[in-house]
Structure formats: C-alpha cells, structure tokens
Image (tube, rainbow, N blue to C red; front, side, top):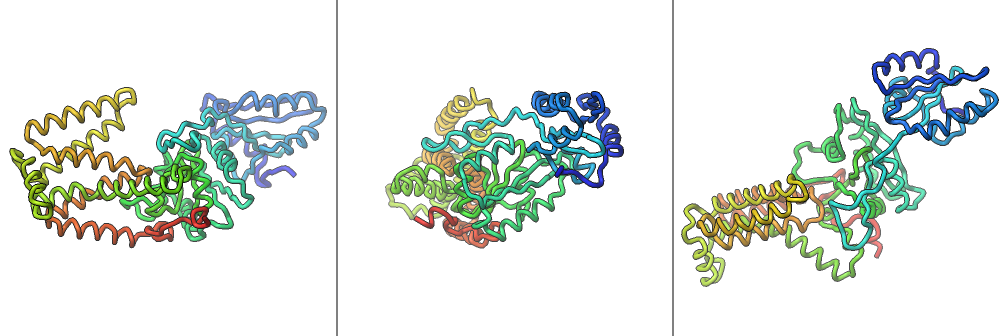
Length: 449
C-alpha cells in the first residue's frame, strides 16, 4: 500500500507548494506526459541527485505501458517517505526529497545529494591503535557506521527535528534492553522542548538539552569515534547524532567517563592502568599546582625542608610583586598561547606557539618578572591539561583552577584544602540525567570481565 496522507491531494497541495517555492531559482516543477500517462515532479535541483532521479523515476515512466504499472512501481521503492502535513512536505523538499503527483496521490521520495558522507580522519581523539576513521557529516552514513559496529537487533533509532527555522534532523540511538530508562526519558523530553530557531552543531544542541544552562562541568560527551560510541551503547547510554555534524553526543556522562581513552581498551591491563593513573595525576596537577605554589611561597614555606624552601625563595629574588600576581600573569599568558594555537592556521600554529612560549619564558625569567620554578609549574600545568582525553572536561578544569587559586590567595593552604574539598563535594552532589556524577563504571564489558 502506498504511504500517503488522506488529507493531501495534488490539486490543492501542489499549487500551494509551487507558490511557496516559486521565487527560488533552483525549484523545479516538471510535468511528465506521454500518451494517457501524466505525473508531476516537484523538487529543488541543487539538493537532489539528478542521476538517481532520472534512473529511478523519469526513465521508468517513459518505459512502462500504463499509469497503474507506474504507480505500483513507485510505491514499491524503498526510499518512500511518509507525509503528515503540507509544512512537513515543504521541509522535506528543502532537504532533498522529490514529491510526485500521480492522479490525486502524492508520493514522497528521498533523493538527497550528499557530498559529505565520507568518513573523516580522527583529529580530536587520535589513538595509536584502534580505528582511525571518525564519523562523517551525513546522518545516514553515521547510523550505518554505528550499525556496522553494533550488531544487535535491540538497537533502536528514533528521528527528531530541532530548530524552528532549519528543521535539522536528529537521531537518537540506544539498546532497548540495557538503556538507562530515566536518562532516555529526560533526553527525549529535552529534545521535544527545544525552542530555538537555529541549531548550529552538536555542541550547540548539547547546551539546549542540558539540565542547567550555565553548568560548568559537562554532563555529556562529544565524540567522533565509532568505537567509543559502540562501547557506550553497550553500557546503556543514549547516542544523539545531528545531521551535518561529525560529532556524536553521549549521555549520560559521569566524571570517570571523561578520563577514559579508547586506547585503554587496546593496551595490556597494566599499561592501561598506568596511563589511566597518569591522567588522574594530571587532573590534580592542573587544578592544584598554581594554588600550591602561592600557598607555599606566601603563607606556609615551612611545609618543605629548609633547603628546598630557601631554593624556592631564592628563585623569586628580584620579582617585584606578590606570588599570586606572578601566577596570574603566567596563567593568563599560557591561556593566550593555548587560544592562539587553536585559532592560528595549522601550518604555523605549532611553530608560532612553541617559539613564542620559549622566547617569552626566557625573557620573563631574565627580566625577573617570574621565577624559574613558576615557569616549570606553568609548563607542567599546561601539559597536564592536555593529558585529559575529552576536551569538555579540560575546559572545565581550566576554569576551576582559578577558583582554587582564589581561595588559596585568600586563606593560604587552608583555602587550597577547603576549595579542593568543596570542589569534590560539589561534583559528588551533581547528577547527569539521573546518574550520580561520581558513579564509578558504566554498565557493560568492563563490569562483566
């Protein structure tokens, strides 16, 4: 049976669509007529694959003997779409569909032309071992890549539309047998509640579905890797894919998810544990080292042995301002270098930031604007930040360390300890779509082994 709407007829719907799209130069209204056979095609030629349309519809129309045969042939095509309203039909035409009017029946087919369906190289989450291809920017291609890695009949795919003006297609994927029901319910509700004209990318969609709009710590993960996606589906998480974006959203995400690299799955057990430990050490170093420097030099130099305390004090000889001003200057300069490395063209970014950092560090110490030890600490903080596999957590840590530094400036080592305790208490009190933020492991292969 044809998939059609009982409410829409060619005589009333096609003139309305033509009136809506007629000012557009690439809109095409093509009547096909031969003998007693007549059909009409409506489509936008810049988003339609013309060769497929010709081979699938136009050529068979002239080869078949009767209109009945043509209708039976068209209704048997696999890319037929359901029509629910005039507005939905209009939106589908802008996405690359073709509306065919045959008698008083309207049939809708997907003939979208896609130039961005090739898998991309992994740039954001590279690994030495494991898959080297990431998602593409085409939604259907991404769903295909995930299904090629996760062969379970319980895998469900549901489609949504977001953005009142762009009508961007969004798919959610989950394993019906093991998905976290509360998280799935909240995510579906959030997608339906989105009231925004334009959704630019998956990162923009993430902000729309977050429970708190101004949250610092991330509760979802953006990933480009298909192996991470299949691993998290097996752990009961929900995957959100957006058409036109090569990143997938994983939810719910807890703190320990952000510290996991997919390389851990490919390394031997003790190697994986060692590299994982390095990430946690880097996490604490990035947050605590600047505050620790200020607390020791300005408040509690007696914590170290006398020789080390004297060495630390000697390195600050000639520095004309307090240690917290010194730390703030170096951290802000480091932030400038990081932002410059992101914004500059790839051909010059590495050279410019490396040379700039070396020259700047040498000049600062020679001019007695900062101590040698602080230069080492600043470099260690910068390196530690990049040890964390997921960028969203790295950005949150960049902000959090200034909060810890502020408490240390006010109350010394006591402020450092209280701020770290407060930070972990805040994280322990946080939840991600019904999951405790400090929940240790996702359900899946890790728990079974």
